Length: 145
Image 1 (cartoon, helix red, strand yellow):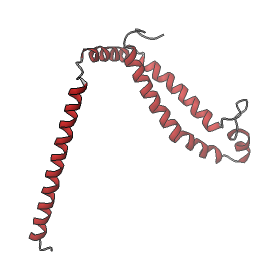
Image 2 (image 1 turned 45 degrees about the vertical axis):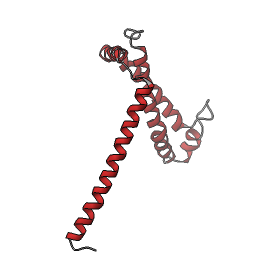
Image 3 (image 1 turned 180 degrees about the vertical axis):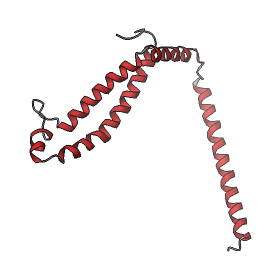
Image 4 (image 1 turned 90 degrees about the vertical axis):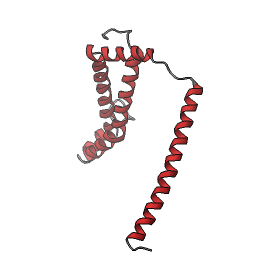
């Protein structure tokens, strides 16, 4: 049962899916390959019977099955953590505060973006010119060509 089920729904969903996708990325980029290497090192009879194909499922090997099980348990743990009173209250308050924010309009966003890009280009030119000047000055002082 979720703590304060309907409050902070979007913040909880965002937090859950963000953490779950991060867990899934870690599982499928590292855990599957680690388990496949570990299971294949156990010997050919174990590999033939379990790693190639799990019984009753057929197309999922043992490493993928363990990874999916780990992912399901991790998803349940994330859900349970986010529904604890302290975590849920934090997410509910966060969503409430974000509703109070005055977001800029599209034209304000574009003008701010252009101002940042122009400032970065000016700083880039200044730092490049300073670098050329100082490297030339130091090479002359140190006796270089």
